[in-house]
Image (cartoon, rainbow, N blue to C red; front, top):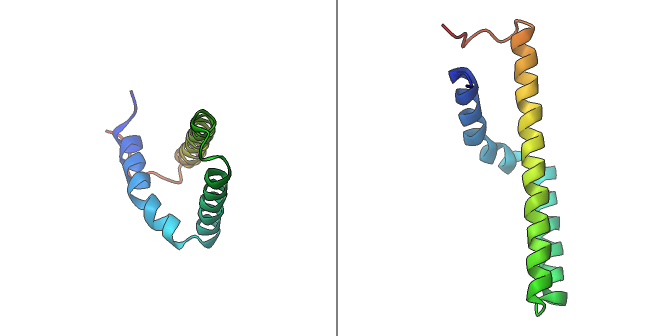
Length: 93
């Protein structure tokens, strides 16, 4: 079972992420590029519903894998900080 500290940090990350995204110019540029590529793909292949479904499923899977990797890196960094004694503010009782 995860500690209350880890759950609190997970909630903080989920809450702060949209604000961080909104200030990150590179993130915004990547989102615009992705939207442009998707619009171009839909224009070229929009009539092919099975192909569009398959591509969207691949994109969702790729995005989910990226989300999991980011969360793993975030929590690994937190764990390293805890292990090194740098983050002792929310010590479990």
